Image (cartoon, rainbow over all chains, first blue to last red; front, side):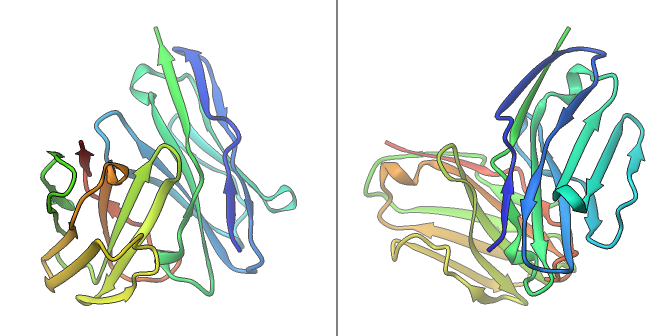
Length: 116
Length: 115
């Protein structure tokens, strides 16, 4: 069975601070995909990034970066120089090779509050 | 291109009433998903369709829930009769394919409150 754990329920930072959101996953699949989605106060979930299990290269996109480590089954998300607009709930998710997108398993989410 | 469109954004109803949630997926997407989000259970998949055909409804909580997709551009999720424990945000999502690599495009959700 697949499982995604986001141990941080809520994080509060001051603007311009760096913040890392943790994601730990469990799967028996050898091929799998990891995702991060953002849910801003407006409510919709927005896709941020996708990573397959064979690509452990870290990725950077502007102020966002992702650290994928198979050895620790983690896919952490860092926001550098956080801004108020980053305030949202962030979900890590996992899908497996034997499943389809329908088998996307979401973590419980981390609520990030960025204040001035 | 327009995203996934859900209606209504908010629905307040009384226990026992029928509730119908609507979704228009992104054109060209062959898969449509209905999710429910609650504080207690997080995001749960209720049902998904492939080319308008229901593939897996194992997440539908009870017979009070039903979903249809009469054509490629429209789906409904119906609750009859509704109960207070059905209060949640219901999301519709679509994707081009159903493979594990595919990202989902979500609608803005319907906030349902059953009094």
